[in-house]
Length: 535
Image (cartoon, rainbow, N blue to C red; front, side):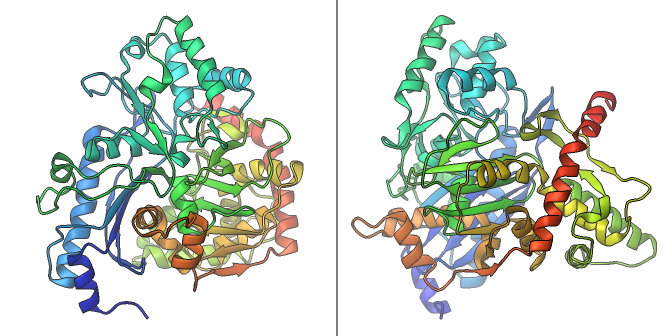
């Protein structure tokens, strides 16, 4: 049984709460949790990245307008539901989409437009750093963006005083602290699992590289300090309180946990921080993470090596594209229904069409689609062109059409996962799914189980997503017992009664997905032709 209204009002007044705010690709969400970790109020703000001067970006105004709007909506819900004004919170955490590039000068001014994870403009840097370090450095990583700016001869690089990620930037402005959680930091630069901070050998190698260009700074001068889950990462300043809460009701002095990336908060929100567990976050982009029990046998450019919020090594397959093309087709079908004068709720339309996919042939009847709105590094694309292709012999019907778009939403992901699961022989006992793809009960879960050929569980709480995950990390910092690990805290205090609804892979689905992915690999030349010729 949860807390009653009177108990919740008392908890809010006494600050027995935690607030998590996550800046995702299309939505900023704020979730306030009570003493039992149940969400008690939330607010959100929709936003979209801009494509300006060949850069995927958001402006600083976009960032703060969105944060303030989502916080205000959450605070209003507190007032409406409980009749009180929110003035204090027990602990706060911020998270955001990982990686990217935010560089500031000594006065705190942004030196170049924020370059998000979605940009695939750092291939030269990625290849050279992977070779230099003997360690995979994906294009999205902050160090790849920094080195690419050096290779491009961008004049602002000499003036960098501080470089961070989106989560690190927001945390800095609210607390004054230039820090990152280790999971988020692992998207900036390789982490040494033994020290749980930036890898010293590789830092030295990069500093020598920077010195050869004539730069006076060193990485330790411009990068944020790395913290692990459970450490306090500063408190809300008076200026930060006014920036977060435009009603000026919120008091300063609230402790913050280390800012984390959406990968780390996904692990927390799905209780998948233990070895041989994994999680898949599937929305605008998609990534899968598996906590490793052993090192990989060699460097795979398709695989990121990151960490849990506690600093344990994780293999991550990250893809830029997931549901955007699928959503576009659903919108088209909604137009069709409206042209006939039928107003259908979009959630209902999603549910009906997703369920239809389960009636399709196991391999989608020979249909082929690519969901590439933007580039996809795993398959070697710097740009994307959404495509649907079939032969005259393909079994073209609605069930197969929906099924192929669900399959292709995971096509690049499966390409990377096959390296881990089949080539490297990595073992995973259970995978937890969260994100929009899993919203229609049983469908995305069944498709994901087929893609991974492993059990996939979806929790009732999975819909709360990363904002709830960072709220849990904030609560862990505040409430953990002496010596209690994050893994134990989540298992004992948060998920003791919740292990999710698990689904085993259907062998026919798994075999059908393998046939589809062979067709997908063969057809990449079609996607290449589209990128080269459709300008």
